Length: 88
Length: 135
Image 1 (cartoon, helix red, strand yellow):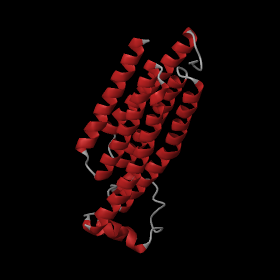
Image 2: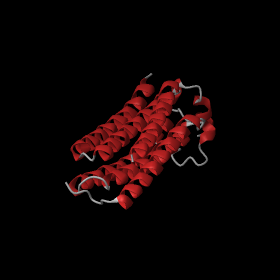
Image 3: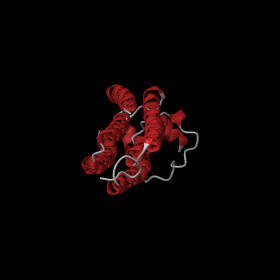
Image 4: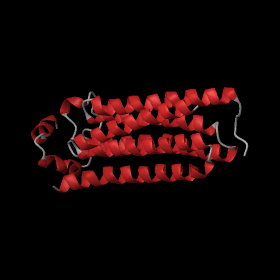
C-alpha cells in the first residue's frame, strides 16, 4: 500500500508543478486564476491522500474548509479582474 | 474505529481508485500547460480535476470510518457544484475583458446580449476595431 501512496503523491506533485508553470507563464490574469484554482484542488487531493494513508479522519474538515475558501477566492478574483481591466 | 470497508479487496479497490484519480489530475495539469488558449485550459482545469478529486476521495472514504466518509462525500459534492460556477465566471470575465482571441469561439451567443457598458474594457485593447465591425 505504501508504494501506491508514494506513486499517487508523486503524480499529484508533478501536477502541482505543471500548474505552477502555467501560473508563472500567464499570459493573462485569468490564466493565473485558473492555475491557482487547480492548485487548490490538488491541495485538497493531497490532504485526502494523507487522510487515507494514516486512516485519520480528524483532518477531513480541513478538506471542506480549503475547498470552500478556494471557491470564494477564485470567484472573487474572476470578478475583480474584469473590473480592473475595464477601468484601465 | 471501524472503517467503511476492510480487508484486502477493499485495499485493492481503494488503491486502484486513487491511482486512476491521480492519473486524471496529472493529465488535467498537462492539459493546463499544453493547451493553446483560455477556454481549452478551463476545460482541462475543471473536468479532469473534478474527476480526479472524486476518485481519490472515494478511495479515501473506503479507508476511514462512516462519519468521515460522509464528510468526504460532501466535499466531492461541493466540488461538483462549484467547478462549473468558476468555469462560467472565468469564461465570462475573459469574454468581457476582451482576453479571448476572436477565432477561439465557434459560436458566440453572448454577442449582443451584454449591456452597452459591458464592453468598455475593449477600448483599452487592440481588438476594439474588430469588435465594432462585428456589431
